[in-house]
Length: 345
Image (cartoon, rainbow, N blue to C red; front, top):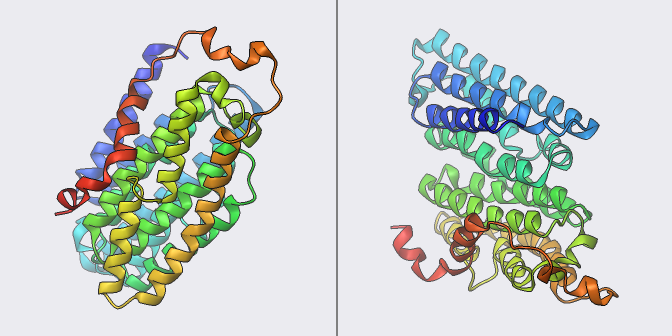
């Protein structure tokens, strides 16, 4: 793709997300979501492959339908209550429709079916954009309306997402699908706490974006698309294979890595609000996600397939790619736990 066109599309995505995040009027928020969707469709379909065309069609249909549902819910609220202000959502039907639309945009269970298929049909960097940047705009709307959304709905969707993300991820050998179900499980943690402590949900979103970016950038640099490919990651870069292992363990929430802090704080907050059974269920379901992270780390760093002498040293035969985004995200995804109390105050 032409660099000027690529820059225009990425800039449009940034503008669309910023417009949604800073809007107090439903029409402006809807306009930002539409701009975001229209900018990423050419990025998804630029490879001219049938899978990419299928992924872009699915993504467009889902996003267009949910944007129309958001516009419909805001119109109903304006019709009955005479306001287009995002923070003045008063109609019960409008609240339910908005929650369903935003959950579908994010890929929360049970409206998650489009996300794994779309990610499987796109390159790794495009999948990284879909699982990180494209979650910011709908999540910002969800945080802005968190005090208005019924708490039982968010708790149910959050628990369902962690269960579905963990169980379905166990069955995947494709890394992009595995990261899609990982995204669903992490979004479940954010949704569970969003009506109780929105700031904690925002902290979880920020850390999730950093953790997912570091893991998927490592997959992109080592050209890993399946579990079998990860067995060769140490031949591309031995150091990268070790950092990839730690990034996945941080995604799983193992202490003393950064990924442990949001789960720890969310469980603590749920127990303080007398939701101990839900906290117990969330802690158990995260073990399912941890299982496929551990399987990936075992294959990528603890096993070595039969290799020729030339294959063992391929990392010496080519220059290292530009890894400045990875070098920024890796320390944050590994070393943030000691300063977590200062970040959440």
